[in-house]
Amino acid sequence: MRAISVRRGHPLLTTALKINPQSPIDHLLAMFADWGGLLQYYLAMGVDLSKLIERIPKAELHLHIEGTLEPELMLALAQRNQIELPYADVDEIRRAYEFSDLQSFLDIYYAGAAVLITEQDYYDLTWAYLERAASDNVRHVEIFFDPQTHTDRGISFATVIYGIYRALQDGETNLNITFRLIMCFLRHLSADDAMNTLEEALPHKSCIHAVGLDSSEVGHPPSKFVAVFDRAREEGFLTVAHAGEEGPPEYIWEALDLLKVERIDHGVRAIEDAKLVARLVDEKMPLTVCPLSNLKLRVFNTLEEHNLKELLDAGLCVTINSDDPAYFGGYIGENFRQSQRALGLSAEDIYLLAKNAFIASFISDGDKKRYIQELEMAMK
Ligand code: HPA
Ligand code: ZN
Image 1 (cartoon, rainbow, N blue to C red):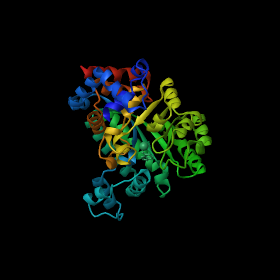
Image 2 (cartoon, protein in one colour; image 1 turned 135 degrees about the vertical axis):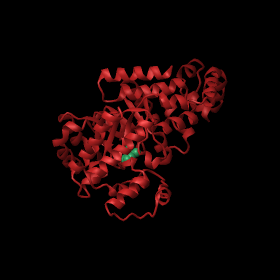
Image 3 (cartoon, rainbow, N blue to C red; image 1 turned 135 degrees about the horizontal axis):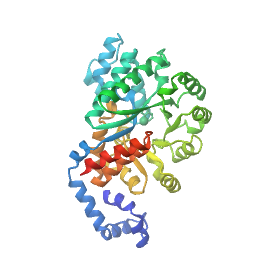
């Protein structure tokens, strides 16, 4: 199966041999004809690239700060804020992380966030993530936060953003990690709610670089939020949106055409629509892919079946990210390592994935160049 998925990413060969990618016999023919590519693939499977993965500088572009709440910190904050949790200890919390889809995850994720009350809680949460990211040699982060998860519980917008932002500033000074902050609207709530949240954010505009869209995807298409995103762009925010994680390719079209996004978060279902793939390639539209998240939420049954390599081979600007690492069993380094092993990624693939993240980030061209030079040094 793996070989066949590699084969699909080779349009030159399929054209030259007039191979029908749907036919199993033609697939077999292609596998033998493309022995060079196959050999390279199996060689990559056997090579341990974990040292390379460890040392390359990375940018993380798809990370929900609420999704970095580790069970240990959840318990400590519950105790500090005198909040009763339905779990007795860390093991019980981890045992509860058995998800069958996005919604079953979100239910637990929003419940966990209830331990976050004070500015210091938000600081501690963000700082813990940054220390973890530094150990993976992350050099730049663009993190999401969901204000509505907190303001709906009576926490002020200022408490949330001051805590997160202060930690990010300290991270830049002390851990050498640059950052951008992205405010997400919860798409299961109304467009009016999102507009009110945008207005609440305006006094803090200088801290927020972009707006995004997350939470339950199916039934809440990007078209629901056109007015909010129009207003956000008028106010000078860049835009991104989760699309094509569980939702259909049409949601990706809407995110591009209606919300005018700079990146698609997830986007893995783009593969179902050839015209869409061609457009994403043509526009160099980045996809912030999260392999371990997709595995945990059963977007793919196994990591071997993940289409990341296929998307990369199709010429898409694919990046690797951790999404909600405390819940999905791995930070960015682990996402790289497990994807490399499962998909037989080569050193060149790893380079491209890391470089794509710097290219797709919201930093200046000068900073991009500097980070990519750092990456190239680490490849030697
Ligand atoms: N998808 C949608 N909403 C989310 C996610 C996700 O992967 N993580 C946190 N909120
Ligand atoms: Zn996400």
